Image (cartoon, rainbow, N blue to C red):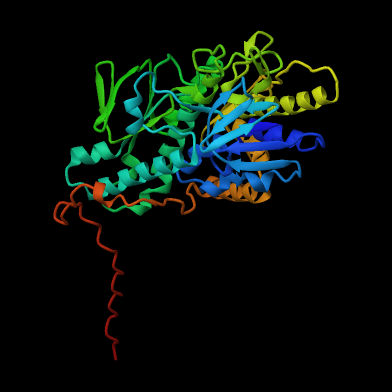
Length: 442
């Protein structure tokens, strides 16, 4: 059994098969760690450390029948039943593809250089560096127009990733950063969220979309719906007849399935996902299972959403299916159990659907979201660290010192403003001299 990808789906498939004595499992991933993607935006906004939301794959999979290989999969040859990786081939009896999704820039690949997305730890650290560097550049800038450009941040796409990133970034500029700078007031930073559709969080009921928009505006995020982006470069973003001057753009608008599944030569949907059978196999390939963000699966006539709980359910189903097949038991079709979905906007602000019928918003939704995410994190240390960080941030409105720029960005800085051009700092307060006492009368 070869599993490609150690995300939510692949990890669950490996764990389920780890209890089967008659199966040898090989997990292949180009990274050595499992990543809790839903909290990537908190690494990007300096709330959490990268280690808080990741864990080495080898420390998670301890079964004697399971091995882990660090390798990058290039293609699949179903006829020879081999997975082709960088530097060799891996034969398989059954194959599970759980390689997740990548960014889609809608036929504008050049935008990737100026508008990074958020799918990996590298992406999150890169965005964090761009945001923090922008404030450092604004601190040095002598031209007020250029300074304003550095302090303007544009996020494209108002799905869960875009909404969460915009809320966290705006909160950081108003609570985490103001004490750090002297020449700029980070509370004057402008955070703009652009969405091409008529409302934010379009997959949610309209009532929750409107609540999310109101919450974003309370956090001083400018929400622009019906804004189709037509141009992005190093100087700003263009949509319609408008142009926003900015040096920091972030992408959360489109996703596409991992290109690995194209090598299967089977029908794909518009997002590049495999149209899987009810048992989650690729069409005409009963020994190839496709799960998670690369699978276009349906349940009761509705598409299964591309979220972590769905991928985990798919992984467990595939593991049980293979065990049933080896035991000669009938194999069952996949049934998705919708436990709900949540999007957090900021401290105490969230919206969500619980079991597809209970609508929640505000602090109750935020508390449920926090509890679910902590429960899904791998490892006690990660859970404890995240709980401590969130508790400290919630009660102090601040954050721990995660605001690190790890790259050498000095060469990209603007010319240094002279002291005469910088706003004068307030003079330190001096204690009043004690009142003089009258001379004693004799």
